[in-house]
Structure formats: C-alpha cells, structure tokens
Image: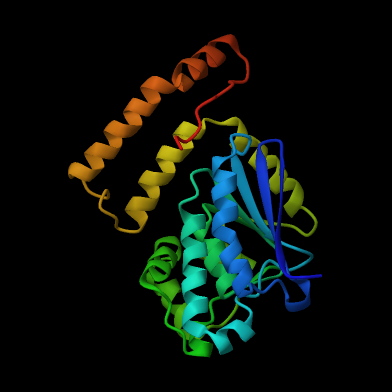
Length: 262
C-alpha cells in the first residue's frame, strides 16, 4: 500500500490517520505536502468540530522518512514545518492519539496538537541530535511551552526515548490509558469536545497559543485588545451565549451553531 494520509468524519470528529506501516508510519515528503491542504478542507467543513490525529496499526509516527532527509534534508524540514504549523493553527480542537513510537517528526506533529492522549506502552523521542538537524525556532518554542526548558533540553540534547509515564509527568502527554482503552477514551472525550461551544474553544485556543509561544498578543497591548474585541463581537453576534444559557435553564444539551468565519 502506498504511504498516505487517510481521513474520515463521524459525529462531528475528523480522524486523520498516518498510514505508512512498512516504515512505522514515517512521513514521506508527499505526506508532509498533503497534510496542510487536507487540514484546510477539514477546517472549512462545518460538520467537523474536532480533529484526531493518529497512526495506522500500533505506531503513531516514527518521524520523517529518512530517504527524504538523504535526498533533500532542507526541503524535508521545510515541508515538516509547514505541516506542523497548519496543524497548530487548525481552528478547532485537535488531539493526538498516540500508541507505539512517536518519534522525531511524529513528536513534532503530536506537540502541534492541542492535546495528546497516549497508550501506556507509547514511546516518545525527539531525535535531531542523532541526525545533525537544527529544529526550527518555532518548533523548539512549542516544545518548551509544553514541557519547560529543562525537559526540552533533555529531549533535544540527547535524543533519548522516554516512556508514556515520564511524558505525562513532564507535560508532553495529557492522559495515559491502559492497554486497549485509548480508542474508547479518545472517542468519549472528542464527543465531549464536539458538543461544546466551538466559539469558546477557538478563542481560548488563540489566546493560549499566543501566550505559550510569546506572540504579539501575550501582553496587554493593542494587538491583545484588538483580538479581545474581535472575539467579543463574535460572541455577541453568534447566538451561542443565548443558546448556552437557555439550554442550562431548560436542562437540555445546547445546540451551538457558531463556526469559524471563512
């Protein structure tokens, strides 16, 4: 089977599967190229309210296909960076469901998701020091925002693997599940995400990401004020607040309708 990114949408959740089992789901150049337009299409789909990224079989992703690094190392890094950024700015909640190896570029993709749930047997490693590769500043900042400078340096300097329990303690992972429980937990949690206000989630995602990466809106200047005003306008015009309050008072599930402007 040719390496590919498969996807499906069900119950408001898009699932994107990294499918290259012959090489532990390593990302080829074509797969890196395919991810941003796929994410763009899913972002524009009003039926999609959350996204799960996972790997086929028992591995998440073993990183970049080394053959692409041999023939075009700089280009492969550029493609990986574009894919990572497209995932990081996806305007709806994203969750990486990790089993098996999550290494190099795979860990780069997982870190670009909003949340990471892992099987207890998952293994994480960030391996540029083994290949003489310099990670982009944005990728490094994202890692530091997740795990802190000390753990980021441990992972980047050594390239040594860590298990799911240590990843959880360090903040790289949000939940670790016992064997056989990952899929059910991801389905349960993404069902919750899909039922909540996408307006709230999108605004919170923008604000949290901006602060974590030290962006222009992390302070109280004009940019931050402008974005707060933008989201206040979206809240006022969306109807989500009125629906949420009405649903609470009527003791029913809310039916939120706001979607990101195109």
